[in-house]
Each structure stands twice: as structure tokens, then as C-alpha cells.
Image (cartoon, rainbow, N blue to C red; front, side, top):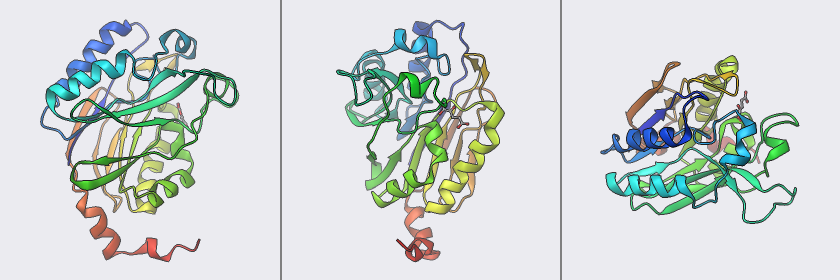
Length: 263
Ligand SMILES: O=C(O)CCC(=O)C(=O)O
């Protein structure tokens, strides 16, 4: 599977409309890839919580519409990172916003919707403003493979990835807006999730500075063996990787750790 990871850099000064067009163009340039990935909340100004209410959109709103058109044009699956979704009705905690990922098929159809389960902010930001997701979500990939979906802070909760593994995941897809200050955790945890679950791992972080936070970049593509196949630096970058997902099953057979789990 040929994957393109778009590590987008932006700052608060870039108007959202211009950023949308720039992102659509960047995705369009990835023709020939089976899957194109974007980072978390790039259209909702990432860490800038104050802007979330104003930038919220319905699930099948302008971001999905724009990227569905691009997915169709280039014939690739597109993981749009995430949006601030305005829920049709308030959730169990009475909030009407969520941090929501959508994966689009090469025909531009939404084939998976994941709402971030673990909200980051310790009482402020996400837990204060957003409803938590509650569902394990996987999505079928070309070649009959299965990906598990999660977002940013979720990466700190290994039990989520075990559940995705049990749901058939062979690769984890993780968009993020992970700050530079803790970027070592980001790299380490991504590799750990790959090694402990014998799953490939594809992460797409943000670069630039928004909401006063410098972002950490270092998006990576990791094989199920833990080998880092590609890693971005601190700036905007596109990683283009030919990822052999058949290698996941071969590795599990060669080194059958998962068979020794005690449940
Ligand atoms: O866990 C961290 O250090 C960063 C998480 C985060 O920035 C987020 O989930 O938005």
C-alpha cells in the first residue's frame, strides 16, 4: 500500500479558507498513493480552543465535501485527520461538539467515522468542550487489510490498541496535534504501539505554532517489527512510503508473541 502522510505546518495567522485550499491542493498532489493522511484539527486551528465553536461543522460538512471531491479526482483513500464536529444533538455529557475523524474511499464515500475517545486538557480544552467518543473503529484498506483509528492523546492508552488489534487491526492510523515539548513521547509511544501489538503504525502530526503551542512534527511510519520506515522532522513535509501490509501477518507468524497473551 502506498501511503502519503502530509505533515502540515500552519499558524494562527493563516485564514482557514486559504488553508483549506492549500490542503486540498497538497492532497491532490498525492495522486498514485492508495491512502493519503492529514493531521488532527488542521481546519479548526488545532490547539486554539477558543476557535472551536466557530469552526465546528456538521459531520458531512465543508471539509468532508471538499476532500471527498479530491479523493474522487485522484482515486485515493483520504483520512482527513479530524474536524470539530457539531453533533446533531448533545451527547451524554450534554456537549454538542466532538473531535471527529472521517476516512473517505477513493469514490469519495465516507467509510469510517471515529470520535476521539480520550480527551486532552485535564479539565480544560477537550474535556470541557467536547463529547468523548465511545466506539472502537476499524476501516478496510486496499488488499483486504484492516486499520484501527485513534487520535493524538489516545496514543497514551495502550488498552485501546489492544482492542483494535482484537477487532482485526493490522495497522494503526493516528492523526495528531502533538506539541514539541513532549515529542519524544510521541515517537516512543508510536513505536511501542507497533512493537507490542505487532501492527504497522502510521502517524500524521502537525508542524508550526498554533494557540501558543509549538507543534512537534515527527510523523512516522513504523513497520510491525518496530523498524521506523520514515520519519518527518519539525517542518512541513510529505512522507511517501510503500508499506507492505502482508509483512504484518508474516512477522506475527515468524515471532508469535501475540499467541502468548494471557487474557
Ligand atoms: O499527550 C500529549 O502529550 C499531547 C496530546 C494532545 O496534544 C492532544 O491530544 O491534543
